[in-house]
Length: 233
Image (tube, rainbow, N blue to C red):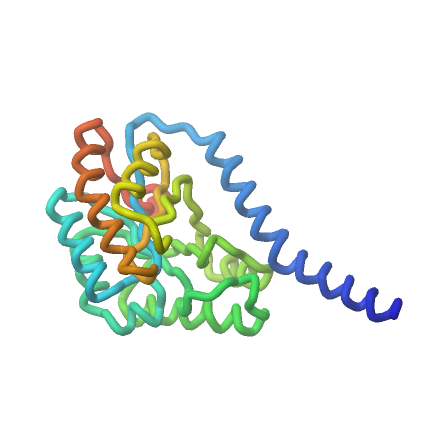
């Protein structure tokens, strides 16, 4: 029994060191860097995860084009391969594109081999689609040691966020999303929203909220920048 308890304890400790601790260290480190950042303009960064989607992303791109707003998209490799024309449109319209892994899976549940495969296939997807970027956001902002090693090997820049509006939630509404953005967004914030996945056609609710929020932000004097401008200058 003692050996069994010791074995379970070792497994738990290894897991904590492999995935849980790295995730929290990265998130704490990001918050500290944000506190030390200096900024001199009223800019915000719209970012979108989990796409592209043939219905939602196209509608979102139409809205961004209407207001000449540039954003950043973190694409899922499997979805991107199914929608190459949408990726081409993102590039042509001046948006930044980063990787959101090949498949949308939690790093906390991926072995080193699975992690390496997911990252490498994601990077191969970027190359296949003609995307030259070092921007990377892991699903749910979760890391593990194998992922960190892969990021460093491929010179990837881990990107987290300052504002989340929980726009994927089943019971959310455009008004709820809008209220969260009004209350949470300030200058130099990276805003994480979604143009794919989500229950009850959640991305459509995000788009409806942005139909009001984008002109509101513009009227308040905000400018929209891409993460390419922020990190890849």
